[in-house]
Image 1: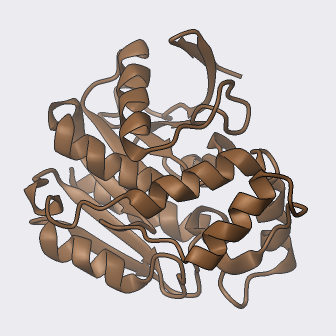
Image 2: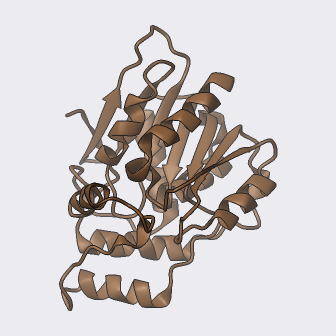
Length: 257
């Protein structure tokens, strides 16, 4: 498994090579709260005709060492260090949920390093229900046993999809998951998101209860020239629920760049 050392911490990432030489697009995927790089495998497999792609496990997530960070700003600066370490520029940066918040913040502060952005199940503000955040805090503190809840999936998600979600959920500690969600809760760039001028694709599941369609509609309205896709039958976890549809939407976007 490829790794890179960022400020003394081993960071894990995965890579899918393009089938053609000099594909013209490098896509880097950023997972959401408590996620990891492996969640993007099926999506990345669908892009090899036009793109080389990578997915990183943020510090403290999946196979990456270190502790999870406590703000989108900290993750944004980690991401800059990661891109610099791999000597990546002119990247298409794609993020889901918390990862989408990191992408938005990165696009505001380092637009020169990016070719385009892809925002998946995310928003310019990511408030978390206080009761849900309190449950996550109690799990992190060991007051209650960690328990996977299928809030992020569509009502008709198959048992196989839910089982995959639970396996990936278990790769990251309860404490890191809590701090990720707390970082989401503090994130708010509602006033600044309109300053982003990069080409943008916005994707949302029709049944997303955590970042509902109206969040994506707001981004679509504020980011000039952005394109929006709604995936029917999917909830928040698009890359697990409907990876082929998600990669298809991304593939069309990349072909137009």
